[in-house]
Image (tube, rainbow over all chains, first blue to last red; front, top):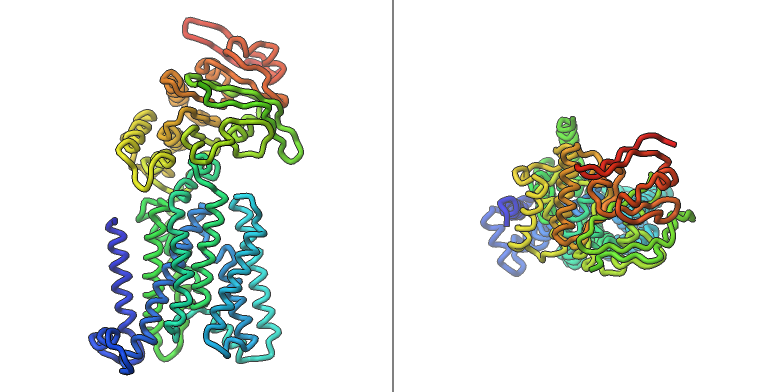
Length: 327
Length: 249
């Protein structure tokens, strides 16, 4: 393990612990960590187990997913501006959630919303695969992703447009901003299998992505099965992004900025960027989720709003740096 | 021993026939130059031989599994794509991908070092490849293909854009590979270098192979007029073949 990986792991661990210690319920740090180990109906233990622990775990799952999927997508498309939402999964997952809220089903049972978001992601990814066709090119995949994103976005807008229920509209708008507040361990159990499966699939793409540094033809003659690589990339991304969107809403900029930031630190090799970017994404979402609790604790600042607020200037800085390096 | 065997190979792209009934056999120890005017289908012929383009007929490479093919032939596309600012050494290591498992073995490291030395890049191995000049990038990409250490090396215009010294050095290096018992199939536009360094030339034009043999037999005034539409000066001198295109017909 390189020094960078050790440093990133330590950062994630530290932020994870910090995330457990921060919250409106004023509990002393030692008490809160002890509370985690204590069972029963003790209020401190309840707060820790039911509120803070799921939140911290979800931040790691969601952030790791977005960072990993972003690095894989950028590696596959050989474009530093690619991001996991590009293949339309986040937009179609969001549509599933929006329909759940608008139809009132979400109020009936807490898991209806994430389950419908997962169903939306599944439909989205099937459509993308059908549209992109059996050939193994990257261009058709981008076009199919854009088409599905636009379509899902348009239907989401239509639902908002025609909705006669102002409460549902309000809820949809806030849900789409992305948040980890008030999530339970049930959400963790729902997201965990998809996330782990997706991580497993994406983490194994490193070699193929490395070969793609030389272009599709050279990669194919280095023994990379490009059709399979694309299929695994799409399925892995759909798993992790679908699960993330289902439990946290849409959280932008993490999958775009984190791989970009870490690329120079791994010698720009896609295979080394994958694990680094997963840890970096987890750290960024953990930090952002701590920040939303600290900056304006009395107002419910949304996580997705904060990542975009922090991510966009960071990105501008990167553009500025890239411009300076160009002749 | 044959490393490439093409029979009745034909390719049509978007309803247009590029070439048909191409038969070609390349043996170990051969350095074969593939020449022909723009649009004759040199790139398509090599990509079809590799199985990267849908084709009719038979190619010995196209039927292999991707992994077996990667150990049989190294391919250098014409577009010198390098997507990320990796180091020269990391780029050259990609050539070992068909050979190693999770980690590079001592043999892999030795092959990378040999390839770097062949191309005179040993001292530059940690430089970022995207910050190099076009010629240096081309050499790094050739080193990557060399590191693959396959019996056959196929390269699409590998010397375009190199300075004369590196053009000659690259052609001589290909010749050495052939002398050492490997085979090289290389497409070229510079007929002078092709005539000088390739023991065998294959001319592609007008939908098929027009000539196949030693340069002196292939580069006849009639063929040059018919396929390339040029005249040329061609002489056998103590310094070897001298070939200089002269006029457009």
